[in-house]
Structure formats: structure tokens, C-alpha cells
Length: 500
Image 1 (cartoon, one colour):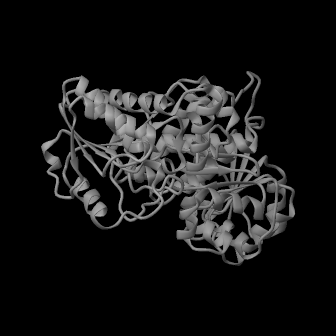
Image 2 (cartoon, helix red, strand yellow):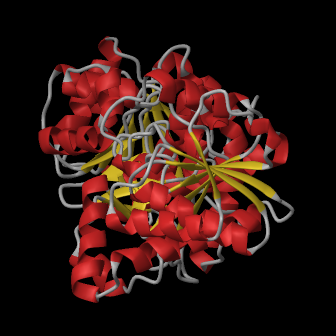
């Protein structure tokens, strides 16, 4: 689906070129659709807005801004454009001339502009064409806009945000709403992009679906449309043994809670039988904390083997630790041809002795991803998709790179989840995700489907919790009810009304 396609900046330019050369929609027409569509989005979010300041650069992003300003004049609104100079591209120059012919006001950009005199500030400065860090007077301008206290509406992408990495280039505008045109740029859904873009509105500008098929994309957004074909079906004759058997290996001394949360999440995501293989000293406390889950005191590889052979999916890592017991459990799991979700300390053990498997899903956060690739967390965050692909290339299987804009990658495809919130930065969230993915995989979904649906359920449950009680103070166990309700929505294909 067109709305689910995510493109790099270069792919977006390729898409524009295809639409112009092959579909036959000229560049100025696309610019006009973008500017006027953006004006409609502005009125949708700020229906009582009357005075608008538009900051226009000299490229096509500025051209979009002049079209919006023209629409505002025609709506008899108070509008002023602050420009960097006459546009460089023919299409943007045409937009500039059209606005000027209507008597539109154009003033030079000045970092001391009193933006608080306007109801809203429209950012049409750089868009996704930014090639360098914002410095000097322009950096001061961005800081002035951010500090003015008025809402900011960004066209295409907030100025200063890298369109590919989602990282800030020196300084970036904090937008309340961003209107993306034709396609969603990668930088809007990864890195710190979500912190800077605000509400994301996509206008495809009437581009036909053939264009999205003809031009390569970097990723697909995980949403209701993506999940529509992935159904969990349970027959009326189903029993607990046929509904998926999950074994969690972990819960070492002082870390029993991690294994319990993974097990409870597997239950809430529909697994029929959930067991935990844990250190002997922890088994009793696990049994007391989660009566629906069987706990087994395990000390040797020999006693773990029957449990491994009796399950459909193994989730290894929650509360595992890296001591001698953990190493024994990890080596035993590697000896069996198992389907595994590998998380937490199991990832750290894997990083110490790398090997490949096509039958596992690896779920690192950026720090664990850095250890898997022997690089820094910062390097991971600068190229999250590249990092996920590198992990798949080195270790096989599927990589779920957690964080803002969680990435699911296999050797051919990439998916990105645009849901979730900062309140989920709390201990135990990864353990819950492990349990959810295990349960979905055990119930018959493919590894790819289980990873994508699991990430989506987890993120939506976090968003539900935030809406109910706020982001601050959220605990991992707060997600458990939402996992169940969002799974029901996914199965029934009930659309969620909350936007990105």
C-alpha cells in the first residue's frame, strides 16, 4: 500500500522523477498539490488560525511554502513570508512569482523575527534536501522559532532533521505537525525523528499506485493494512497443547521477574502452555508469582533437554545472566535444532561467540546491537536499518532492533513500527516483547509475521497505557491487558482510530 511505503531521500527523489517522467504529472503540479494540500492540513489542525508566518528556503521545499502562502492570501488570512532569497529552481520560482503577483509580503529572514506575533509558523526552509549541519544565523533562527512558543507546521520534514538517519544536523525545528508528501521519509520514523515531527500527516498527492511499485522502497510501515492477512485461527477443537507451547529459559538469581513477565506476556498473546526453565533457587518464587505458568528447576543441560524438545518455541535471555548456569543453558539450547527468540543476556553470550541460524529472532536494543556488531551505540543509532541488516547478515534469522521506530529485518525485507512512546523506556519492556513474539510464533505464524505483529502489539499496548494514565510511571506489566485487546483488534481487523 502506498501509505505504508517508507523511502530514503534518494528513493523519494527517484519517485518524484518517475511521477514526472513516466506518469506525466509535471513538477509544478506536484508542488501545487503539496502546497495546497498542506494548507488543508494546516486548517484541519488549526481551524481558527488567522495569521501565519512562512519560512521559505530557495529550493522546492520553499516552493511548497509559497503555494501554501498563496492559498492563505486567497483565504483572506494574514500571511507573511520570510525568505532566504529568490528561489533557485524553476518550479519554486513560479510559486514565488504567483505569490508575489497577489501582493504577498516577503521579508528577509532574520533570527530576531517576532514569531510570537503569529498564530503559527510554517517551516518550508530545507525539507529533506538538507546536506549539511545548520549553523550560524540559520541555527539561531531555528532556536528562535523553537523558543517562540507558537505551533510549528513542517512541510515534508522538519528543517535540520536528517531525512535518512532521523538524527539532528546541528539544530532542528520541533514541529507540532509534519506534512509528508508522496511518501514517508525514513528519518521521520527512526532515530529521534518522532520527537521532532509531531503528528505525521501523509499526502500522496494523487500519485498512482504503479509509481510505488516501480520505485524501490527502503521499508514497509507495520500497521493495520500490513497485518490484515496475518490471522491467528483457532479451531473449536483446540486444546492447550495445540495452541502453542512456549518455553522461557531465564530468571536467574535476583532476575526472576524478567522470566515471569516474558511468560505472562506469552500467555496474554495466546500461547496455550507456557513454561519457565530457571535456576533451582528461583523456581519456587516463579511458581508463586505466576500460577498459570509451569516452572522447572534446571541446573544441567541434561535436565533442560526434555523441556527444549517438548516446546514449539524457546524464548531465551530474560533474566538469564551471564554466569556459569547461563552459559550451560545457552550452550544446551544451541545444540538443539530449535526455533528461538534470543534476547537480553543471551544476545551478549552470542556476541562473545558469534554463530548463525536461520531459525531465530534476535531482539537487541541499540546497546546489545553494538555488542553484536562490535561498534558503539551511537554508530547503531546513526544507521539503524544498516545495523539491523548487518546483524542479519552476520547471525542469520530475523533482527528486531528495538527503540524509537523499531525495525524488523530479514535477509530480504525491512519493516518499521511507528507506534510506541517514551514511557516504554522502563525495565522489563523487552522481556514482555520476547514473550509476545514467542506466543505468536508458537501459534503458527511465520517468524516474520510473529516478529512484526509482536512488535506492533507491544507498541500499541504501550500507547494504550499512556493514554489511560500518562507516559511517566508506566511499568512493563501495564502492557499485559493491552496486548490481549490489541491482538483481538488485529484478528478482527478492527482499525485503530488514533493516528501516527
